[in-house]
Length: 190
Length: 82
Image 1 (spheres, rainbow over the protein chains, first blue to last red):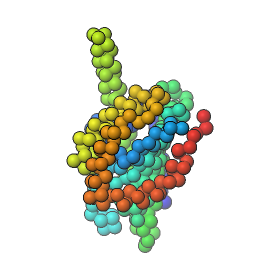
Image 2: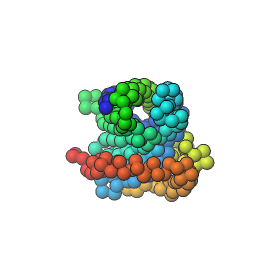
Image 3: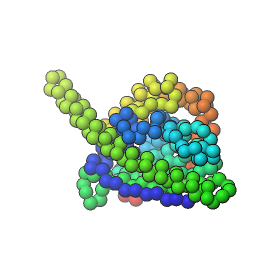
Image 4: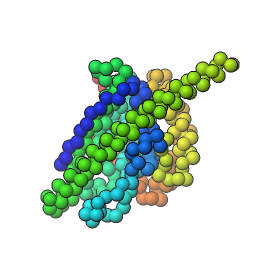
């Protein structure tokens, strides 16, 4: 088993981060190029709690080294199942993800939480943790190799994801400002 | 927004995504949403997507993943301490 965790503070409000999060993997993110599609499978607004639950399917395409292909097969496309919970009243986004591909050999479970920063008003804290377990039978050495490769790949993708998301946040802010300006002008004309 | 894994669903997906983002940023996040206004558009997109998932054999993998996620639903759908 390998554990991974990282923390980051985004210099944007929770409202902005939780909104831009829905387009984290849009073309504005020029870093996470391994994410080739994001589909929404289900979405429900709980009438009582106002918690918004969303199921998404994330399609990735990333080459694996030769030695690993002999275990996982030659496909470079993999699927991730993600369920997110937005609690608007508590200002908290929780996202839980797991691998769907190669799930009989490997278990990757990730949790991401976005909350307003405690010490810094207007900023948002990002907490990410992941648990990686090779499930295949056989030599411990091979399992260790698979886990080591996966946690390293996870770390690289996490850095790309953070950098790409920073760009999405910056562009989102510009676009929203432009839209507000446009709406204001239209109101003045009317 | 991001593409769909099924190119034939991109158009309905884009319409739905745009509707959702507007609803989320203007109503949900401000606490004024009473219902999900984009549901009719979601239904159109879902019809297309469900067919694509079935054709690609992804629907069965999804069933397994959903079953695995039950504990998270139980934990995160309840009211947090406020």
